[in-house]
Length: 261
Image 1 (cartoon, rainbow, N blue to C red):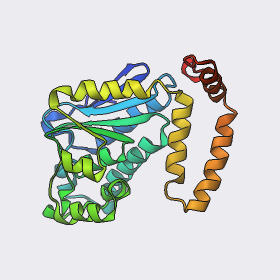
Image 2 (image 1 turned 90 degrees about the horizontal axis):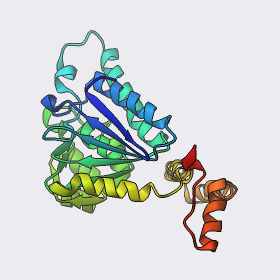
Image 3 (image 1 turned 90 degrees about the vertical axis):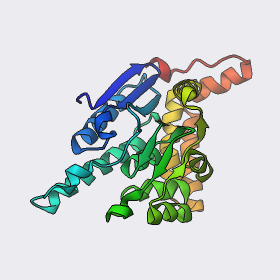
């Protein structure tokens, strides 16, 4: 990991900061790999249950590094490598047990918008804007559309993808691309406070629930119920479930076993 990505740990929170403001935090291959390394490190730290992804500079992320992509390539394999590594990084956001919150300011475009959509939750400042504008430069945002359509739905995603237009933070909230919109001066504090609120839950249960959510979300209803039945039965057998239910009955605050590990 180099200084294009900054990683801070303040258990139970982690904070990953995109740090290429001079390129509008463009996701170069090097930066994508740095993000992946940071995510891997966070995934292995059981003391962290919530990860915030934010950015330095005037914008969250302008997407892939166009200069890197536009240069003459010896073969298509060089381009495939960029998108292969980006795909791995985006999938890691869902595979890791920690809840991931995007803290968005400025603009998030193309793969930057994809990054927001791929996070579990998102908070944006009132002036933030989002777009998948590749169509305007002859490059349809085919990879950004994957998490985008799964988060905001077909019609809204097609609107963004075909027009390339910017949507405001308020429209992003209506679409379901972000969960909350706050004033710029409150963005950091509001995101952190929400993260701390979520972190009060059992780390084991948060991770189990996140995995279950993404595992069932694309299943048919009957299969989803069959899968969820097994997960919740297993959950009931866990130490933290016993502790949580006992604490509820005894009217006290639970002491999570998994948070001590």
